[in-house]
Each structure stands twice: as C-alpha cells, then as structure tokens.
Amino acid sequence: MYKSAIGIITRNSSKYIQECIAFNYLIGFDKIIIGLDNCDDDTYCKIQKLPKAILTKVDIFDNGEHRPDLGFQHKGYQTIYDRYKDKVEWLAMFDDDEYFYDSKRRKINDLLIDVASDVGQIVLPWLKFNHNKQVLSALPNVTRLAHFTMREHHPQIECKTIIRLNNVVTQGNPGDWYYCHSAEVFGKTMTFDGKECNLFNAKCQMIPEHYDTCLVHYITGSMEDFIIKYKNWVRENALLNKTTSWSFDSLMQNGGDVVDTRMSIYADELKELLKLCKT
Image (cartoon, rainbow, N blue to C red; front, top):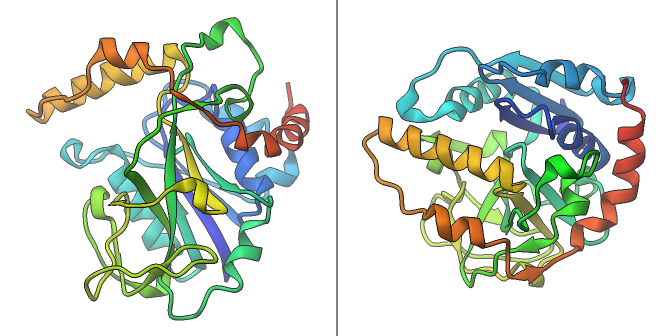
C-alpha cells in the first residue's frame, strides 16, 4: 500500500512535463501516475529522459477515447481511481500545471502521517499564477516555478483536495469529483456544512497567506501557452454549446498583480534534478 500518489492527465505538455514530474518526485509522492491523453508531441519521450530514480516512481497509461461532453480528464480520473483505490491511501489529482507548496519544504508523506484516521480530504487553497507577459520561447531552459512570480489576487480562493480513498462516498463529474465524510486543512481545523464534504475544485473563503500549504496553479503559463489554451478552450466550449466569460484582450493584458516568490524555495533542487535528464 502506497502512502501517497498523484494522478495527472496531460495532453501535449512536453515543454513542462519533466519539471512537473521531477517536482512531484522532489516533494515525495510515492507514485506519480501519468495519463497521456491523445498526445501527438514528444511528451512520452521527454518522460523517458528523466533520471532512473524518478522513473521508478512513474506509471504511464494511455487515456484513450473519452466522451467530449465530460472533458478529457474525466475518463483518466476514473481510470486512476479504479486502478489505485486499493493500492494508495492518499490520492491527489492535480493538473500538470499545479504544484504543491509547503512553506517548510516538508515531504508530502510527513504531512499526511499525522492526519486523523477519520479525515477524508485535505483542503489546499489554490493560487493562480499568470503568464507575466513573458514569451518563453525567448527564454529556453527556465522552470515555471522559478520564472513566473506574478499571481492574481482574489478575495475568494478556489481549492482542491488530497483524498483518502477509503473515505470516498460517491463520485460525480470532474467539477465535483469526490464526496467524502470529512475534511481539514493541514494543521488547522475547518468546518463545512452538510454530512458530506464536496470540495474538489470548490470555492471557499480562504486566504492562502494564512496557511503553510497551498496549490500553485500556473493557469496561463507563458503568453504563447495562454494563446493556445484560450483558443482550445473557446473551441471546446463551442462544441458543447457553451458561452465563454473570458475576454481574450483583458487576459492578455493581465500578467498578474501580486508578486509572489514562494516557489523559489524549491527552484535550486529542482534545477539540479533536471540537469540529470538524458539529452
């Protein structure tokens, strides 16, 4: 039984996939599960160039076909849950641009070991870092967590959770993927209404600066990545007959309004790990 695992469904993320996997190895996940969703770039090859010590913790599977109305991550999340529900105690399902932060650089298992046995989820407030109006193609070999230091400031912060699999009650669609009986924040007590805590990608009133742990989300990456993401997002919503509330012009101008360098505490060690990748 693994203490912890992280599941990531990724599509054409070769630019960042080594950094993503190396970071999750660095913070101590026992297993790093990667679902490749119809990738037509060199994501798989980039993964295979990671150091052997990292690859021993990596499981890769092909996400295959899926229902477009559910989003490309839904099938992958279900596959991970089905395959690992009896093999993993704690499961995080984060995106390939979401990075766990702990102010004291503690390993994830060291944080989880002291969680009471009746707690089903650990809540992580979610900080959105932006593209900083930077063009990454002009800055080769830089890491996201060292380079992108501007984030949005929001009074209401979204959150994701790390789930204890034996506490899962029911499953829904990606917006409310898990229902568990109880939840808390690392080192702090939090009370939620209702008998079941539905917190996956939920919103709650949390000020991340008040917590030692959070999830950093590089929501737009570089300007090039943002343009690609925006166009894909508009196209996918059009297929679902949904309207978009994002304004391309406003988001292009918004590089973030708060300087936040918290992720720099991991930068040097991550850089050394990435130097070990095969060329």
